[in-house]
Length: 259
Ligand code: BGC
Image (cartoon, rainbow, N blue to C red; front, side, top):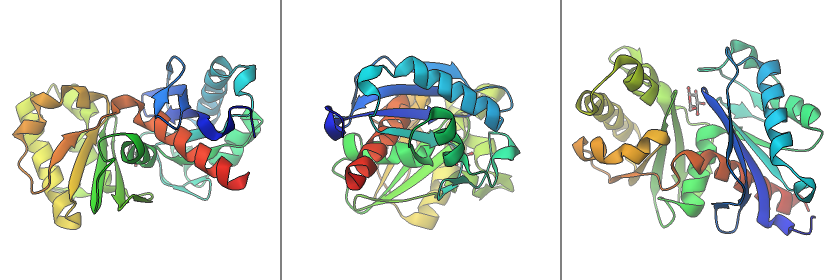
């Protein structure tokens, strides 16, 4: 264990558009370094992404953080370190021993998990779902739609509700924030799509609380009030940092368990 103990960890969040990282005080859920961001390499092929993460990690880490736990969040189903899907990244990730490849490139252990699961964990530990009981649905509206389910504080991993079918379409291809930007949708028109999307989520899950994250959640006043749902729907507290914070928190917990 480092002199920092499990209180400091590093989180890296790989997204369809950008890769972000920072060191984190996992007790308070605060970033304790600048957030470093690099673009996700075009095509998001494994070698290129792994190289970009290595460069970002080198920039982030200093001697003091040498053996701080490192968590890496990735936008795919992650089972036992293997990436099992690829919606906004290269298909070459499907079936890849991604965790082992990152560990080899970085020369250290990592904790590897789905990006929305990382965001969900962070909102549950430090953010909008902190006091929540029952079933919480955390969604991230970004390049795709990421979803995490937390029931009474426990994460149910790899819930891919961003891909449910709405009007014959994969939901994230109609309602993600990237689609809003690409199609130049007004907040009102986007909210209509979100209404359908969250209604379907309610039909399947009956959540007690819905948390809406992703960078666009900082503009929540333009679209959340337009939604009429059974459960309260609230903006994420941690916005675009949730993935970093959740990855770091997970890494720190696993590090403590192993130590
Ligand atoms: C992926 C999810 C990911 C989400 C947000 C979806 O396309 O299938 O695994 O969590 O995008 O990045």
